[in-house]
Every structure is written in C-alpha cells, then in structure tokens.
Length: 456
Image 1 (spheres, one colour):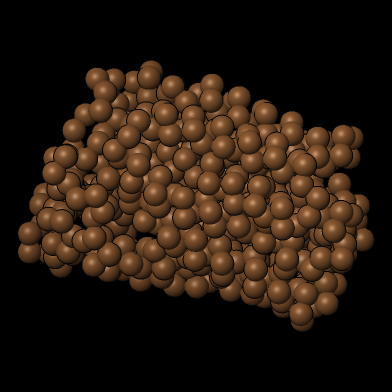
Image 2 (cartoon, rainbow, N blue to C red; image 1 turned 180 degrees about the vertical axis):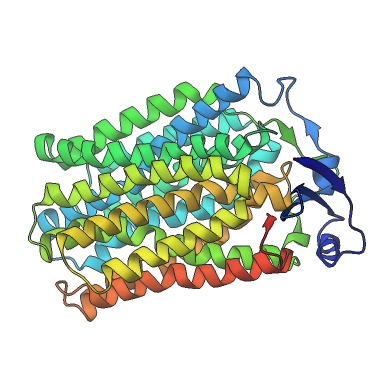
C-alpha cells in the first residue's frame, strides 16, 4: 500500500478550515491499487501551534499511561456513582419514599448530573489556569463529604442538596479532568488511550451498581452512602498526583474562545450532544423499576440490568476507542448513535418481555459506552488539544440542557401518562432522543466532508 500526503487548498473540504481561529485542514490519503481511496481529514488549531508544554514528560510514554490509570480511577468513582443512581432511585421509589412521585425522586440524580455539568463549565476553564492535580483532590473531598452528609438525610429535599447538588459540584472536577486530559498525552493510539480512561466510568457503574444494592440490603441506605463516600474520597485523592495536563494554552489566549460558538460544526456538535446526553440516563434510571413493575422481577434482578448495561458500556468504550484510530472518531460517533436508536426503537418500544429487555440492555449499553468515550476524541480531533479542557467545559452546557431534557420529562410521562405502571410513553420519548442526536451528527459529518470514504 502506498501512502501520500497533500494539502488541498482549492478543495471544497478545505474551505471549512477558515471558519475557526485560522484552522488549517490537511487531507491525507492512501490507495491500494486502483480500487479504493480513503482520505483522512485532520485539523490543526492555531491554539495548538502556540500551546506551551506544562511538563517535560513525553507523550506516549510510561508516565502517560500512569495518567490514563489516574483518569480511569477518577472517572470510575465520580461517574460510576452517578451511573449507579438507578439503585437509589429504585430504593427511594419503592421503599423509603413511596409517597413521593417518580418525577420528584428522579430530580436527585438529575440535579447531581446538572450541577456536574454546570460545574464542568467552570472546571474546564480552571483546569487551563490552575493545577489539575489540586482541583481533582478538592473534588474528591467534596464528593466524600456529600455522600457522608447525605447518609444523615431523611427527606427528598435534603438528598437533593447533598447527594444531588454537593456531590455534582465535587464530581465536576474529576469529570472534566478525566475526560479532557487523556487525549493530550497521546499522539498515537489517542482513541484507545481515551477509551481506556473513559471505560473507568463504565467499570465504576458496573461494580458500584451491584455494591450499592448489596450495601443497601445488608447495611441500609445510610451506611451504604457513608461507605461509598469514604471509598470514593480516598481512591480519588490517591491518584490525584498523576492528574496533570501536558499542554496549556499560550498566555495570550482568551479565557473563553468565543470563535467556537461561531463555528457551524461546533454548534451542530453541541446540539447533537444535548440529545445524546438526554438519552444516556433514561435506561439506567428506569430499567430497575421497569423490571419490577412490568416484568414482575425482584429488585435485585432490576439492579442487575444496570450492572449488565454498565458492563457492555465498558466493552463499547474500549472497542470504539480502538476503532476510532482506524476509521475516525466522528464516523464512530455517528455509527454508535445509530445503534443506540436502533436498540431502543426495535427492541424496547414494541416489546415488554425479559428477552427483549436483556437485548436492549446489551445493545444500548455497548452503543452508549462508545458514544461517551469518543466525544472527547472528536472534540480534540476537530477543535484542538491545547484548549480541550475549556472546549469540554463549553460542551458541558449541552450536557446540562440534555440533563433537563432527559430523565425529568421521562419521569413526568411515567407519572402523568403511565400512572407509574405503563412505561410506553416514557420509552417512546427515550427512543426518539438518539434519533435527534443522529440527525445533528450527520449534518456535522457532511459539513466537514460529503464523501463517505473519509476518515473523520
């Protein structure tokens, strides 16, 4: 196979490079005989060209893998706990607060993610100007205090403040650092490294779901929260010394790069993320109670569905991470979003059997894992590495909106239309969210290049 590289200044694909901060577009191609020709679209951000090294540690080295491990642990606890909220939702709904509506109870987990997203906007900018190791440690302490404090709460309102608001604020620091740092430390195998780091959230969600269910059954909800708070605080503190960035923006860079907002690709990307994140939490929050109410399974069986879905999300994160380096991260994001929509529309909407629910769990778990793992890689690939923390911070605005459009409307539909027993309207709403995300991603993909055989 022969390789060649060329700059296409007059190509229609190159014209989009002028939209944002003097980005240059480079198109690489490879041909095998005369049968096929694939091109690779690469973007070079001016901010990356002016970026400063924050450490003398080299990219792709042994230290870089230590950073990946630290990100893995930080995300395993911060996002894993959030992913395991479905167990608390089931416990609150069926046991501790049966008089409260599903919509009200779901706001505990929703506030948790919303504050994590809002805090992520601030955290993204702080990570570019302050030591991320210190910020990660501060987040760990706040996370621990939030869950220990929540263990003494006796009302939904109190839990919204502790388990929701305070925990979300603390988790925003490892959330931003863990998702944005990995791509900076690798020039080769960037997708794989990021996929490994972000698989931590899936691993955390998997074992945290089972552990939380077991702790609640054996020790009660208060002690389950105390153990979770202590373990998460100690573990995230332990890895904080390795949570450091490799590149920082030049001192002359603006605090907020508003040119991103003027870039059509970025606007389409943000819109797609609104609906992708809105779709993310619905199955995690509603499958446990759906298993009990509709399929007449035990509470532990319902929790196992969340565990299984988190397990498949780990596989999805790793598989997409490896494939992203081969086929292009944006192409993989489009494919996985289509798979998520397919799983919900084909297997969950028309059926209410144990077999189809397990199928949905497997398909959606794999797809959603691939989606969340490749988002930072797409952002780094298209919009630049040096400013990735603040870019991810801006993307968290769409995460915030997605959080509002996700679980609260689903829960309201379950209460108002389904009377807490008929999940049909809620599932239909859930299924249309990845469809909307897919439409915006396709628009972004064809804005960059209308050719199908292009690695983007």
